[in-house]
Picture 1 (cartoon, rainbow, N blue to C red):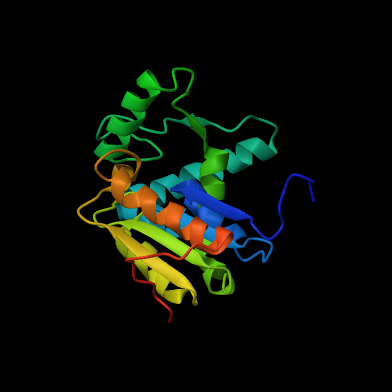
Picture 2 (picture 1 turned 120 degrees about the vertical axis):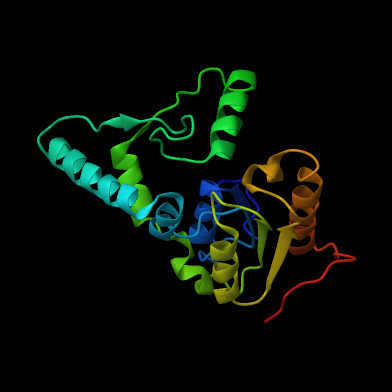
Amino acid sequence: MRAEVAPDHIGIWGSSYSGGHVLHLASDQRIKAAVAQVPLVNGWGNAQRLMRPGVFDEFLVALAHDRAQRYAGEESAKVPVVAPEGEPSALPTPESYEWFTQLGEAAAPNWRNEVSLESMEAFLEYDPAGSIHLISPTPLLMVVAEKDTLTPTDMAIAAYERALAPKKLVILEGGKHFDAYTEPGLSQSAPPAVEWFERHLMGRKEAGTRETVS
């Protein structure tokens, strides 16, 4: 343990894919409070929701071919993270294309719009909510967008229902996946996270909110 770390005050926060990392890590009882925002809960199920059945089958064939090429010593092939509608990409939604292209130009000019098929194969195998019932007794807050199609709302809520108390669910009314990062959605997503950490890491009582206890 590093000297500057207070072991009784360790909290973790993550959003989208890193929200899945929170669900995976929070069962480590060294974690004292956790917040997962618009989280990925299951890679295989998520990919099936993003791709039509025929496209998903072709994707699996491409992954198998790439795996064989890697075993033969070649580098993994790359695909775009986002692309215009109708073109192949890792995140095939118009919302994702708009968000990443605008953010890339404005805030991350060195970002490269590519991901390896090896990473995509690992994504399919990732099931961060598989052990969500083991997070308890660590307090878990999940922030879910009401109209999320990238990490689907119903999948996230179903995972939340498998979690044990203490837990709390905040739903961003009318929000889509990326609305959690900008106004007006940010004013719905950020304060509950701050309050959660203040309550469970700093002992400050949360006021005016409801908490699910079972």
